[in-house]
Image 1 (cartoon, one colour):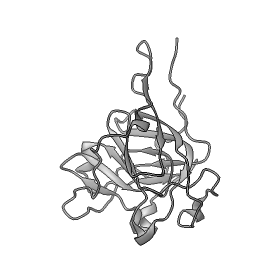
Image 2: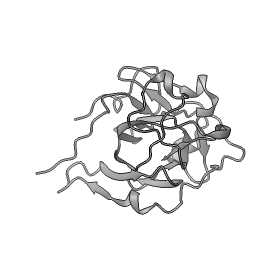
Image 3: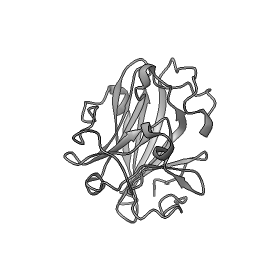
Length: 217
């Protein structure tokens, strides 16, 4: 029998948490998360077999730094990466480095995304490997993550939090460019990201990780 093991990144976990936010104009996304995925993002989506862990999807895709593309994650989520917006895997990775210039990736980078729904019915995505996204001219975002959660999209108190192994933080509190946005009309919660390993949508954040930010077996 085969199961899909749900794990956190060994580096850090990024959490999309439903708690406070801002909207962009009419709430509509400045990008198009419904755009067709490039062939590279369709390498594979796998579900649990024989009824095991059917809430978990594994999506394998390649981020191509030579193009701007929308990558489909699982059945509902989206990641948009701008041309030239991906740092090479060799670039230093850490909290104080998100805005520093990096060597831009010259070749596609293969990414595995595990997505599932936690015990509270909220979306969770775990990415490997951990990546940094390169600063672009004019301050435009190099990467934006969209999580499909209709309830969260209508809750203007929602936030997307970045979580380390033991605690979570609102990156938008110190960096307004990473503030959470809501597209209630289309059911998206989204924000700019400067790095990733994992994301979660949750409610009732109290400063401690929820059950789905803890390691899952």
